[in-house]
Length: 171
Ligand SMILES: Nc1nc2c(c(=O)[nH]1)N[C@H]1C(S)=C(S)[C@@H](COP(=O)(O)O)O[C@H]1N2
Ligand SMILES: [Mo]
Image (cartoon, rainbow, N blue to C red; front, top):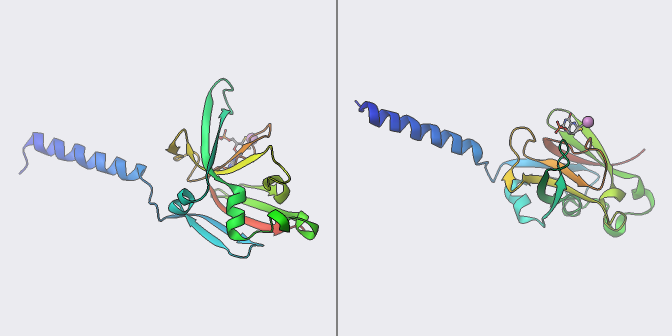
């Protein structure tokens, strides 16, 4: 039998381990699928995203413009390049009808045109597939990934709980 003190310590340690494992998200978990009009469909893990070119920006929060927060992640253009989507020099002619459907775990979807994502067309705009807020993983409210989009007035396309990007050409 454990003494009451030891057993209390044991329970505290077990609880701490449990909380810790919830906070640490597996690096090899697939967090983003990229499909559709791409050369190479992708299944990206957290480690893949960590190894890609990254960017961040500081922006007033949606609900209190006097508070700033920093969103960090992989620019969506980098993910499209890696998948072989028709961006860069290929973004012309019929590919000008190209767009990305951002799909969330809850079924919410939002569309970004390829020309909004491609810096050659939209040098002022920054669209991240963000995985950190103020240096921390996003947590339950935002899911693994959230679109963070600097350069528009509303937050409706800041898709939370992003699980997939589907590249399409309009009919
Ligand atoms: N997955 C998901 N993302 C979403 C939404 C949603 O319903 N589901 N709503 C959007 C809208 S309309 C807004 S205004 C912003 C901000 O939502 P929040 O205030 O709940 O963070 O999230 C956007 N992202
Ligand atoms: Mo909204």
